[in-house]
Structure formats: C-alpha cells, structure tokens
Image (cartoon, rainbow, N blue to C red; front, top):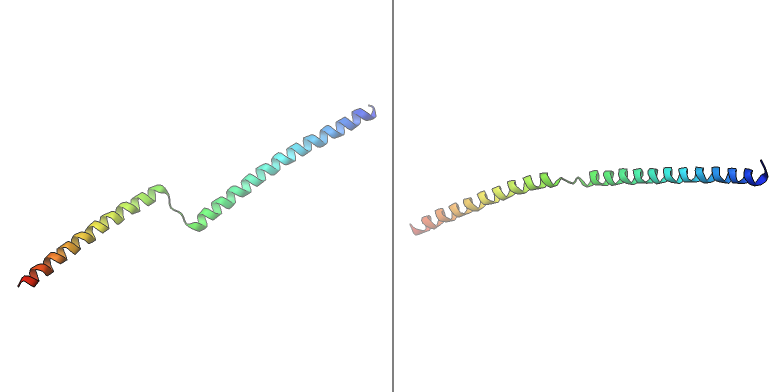
Length: 83
C-alpha cells in the first residue's frame, strides 16, 4: 500500500469511529434528558388526566351536597324566624 491509501484507510477509520461516537453520544444525551424529565415529573407529583377527572367528579358531588345542606339550613332558619 502506498501512503495515500494508508492515509485514506486511517482517515476512513477515524470518520467511522467519530460517527459511531457521535451517535452514541446522541443516544446518551437523549437517555439522560429522558431520565431528568421523568425525575422532574416525579418531584412535581403530577396526576394523570384520568385521576384528575375522578377527583373533579368527587369534588363536584361534594359541592352539590354542601349547597343542598346550606339550602336546608336556610329553610330551617327561615321557618324558625317566623315563629
């Protein structure tokens, strides 16, 4: 082999190694960001949309019960004032 072929072989080997390294680096960065995102979500203690909807229905039901109790109390106090 002459010098130019050796040089091209070395250069192609470096390029291949560089490409593999950059792809590996890209995968590592993506994985790292994914774990950081999941860690942040866990720290924020977020709930799923389904859990949110269930809690919303429970709160709506409780609010209706509170309003009905207030109405009943107001009717009772209104009757008591008449006497």
